[in-house]
Amino acid sequence: MAETPDTPSLVKLTRKDFVSDQDVRWCPGCGDYSILAQTQRMMPDFGYPRENIVFISGIGCSGRLPYYMNTYGFHTIHGRAPTIATGLKAARPDLMVWVITGDGDALSIGGNHVLHSMRRNVDIKLVMFNNRIYGLTKGQASPTSEMGKVTKSTPAGTIDNPIMPLSVALAAEATFVARSVDTHTEHLQQTLDRAGRHRGSAFVEVLQNCNIFNDGAWRSFTDREVRDDRMLVLEDGKPMIFGKDRDKGIRLRGLRPEVVELGNGVTEDELLVHDETAEDPYLAFMLSRMFYPEFPVPVGVLRRIEHPTHDELLTGQITAAVRKHGPGDLTRLLNGGETWVAS
Image (cartoon, rainbow, N blue to C red; front, top):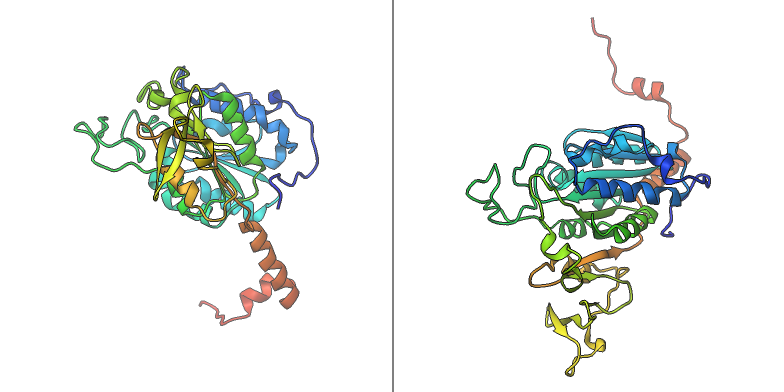
């Protein structure tokens, strides 16, 4: 299986072709604008006709994105977007299906739906906007809110451990797991492009700012002035080096990673080398647990492996059943068992 989708017919489109006639209704300054823009920019590169692309969303500010894409789309119910996407992909495996969700929609009421779509390796691209807050309902703590976060629903500070989304996706056996940032536009576009070309369950966490109810949630490590020293850009097959002067790295010490400075006896040969195609998820899981301030925050593709997809396996079973038993007959099936006439 290649890391490119099977395009029904190559079509030349531009970003403007994917801009709908709907007024974009997010708060001024919201990070969702950037995610929408990068999505529209990279969609023409896939060569899919718009009528073969579907965006499915749940509840939350992120749920509005399908309205702004000039493709087919569903604005579904809270947490159930992966379920609708699974059914659609089973019925129409030729479609490119995107799921747009938020940290609350995906990881609270929608948690089981995300888990099962990932473990089944449903060929969908799930993009989760993570702003660590419930924005649409006006600022309650979400499953990713940090411990002690004071919000309208936790006036004394939340006492719940935050979920680490990438760890959850890896535990669910997603075959593509990545992270990017709303303000890192070039990196975000590249990450979404790679997710779109993956065949299988793709999970992309986008660290996104809600400037109304949780402004600056990620600013301590994503701002231009500090990000080189506080973020780790993953590159497949290359050592894990970071820092404005490229003088820091990640080395394994026992079973834990550690930050080291290059020089004074420490060389690149001692650093961990990223392998996004490793079948075992140990390295990717370790990266998913690294976070600022103890570690630089990893961004990029953590894992990318190839497994048979849910729709491929399902189609295979149907083909085998027809070969063995012949085409189905619904009338015969309905009348073939115990039947009776109600009087």
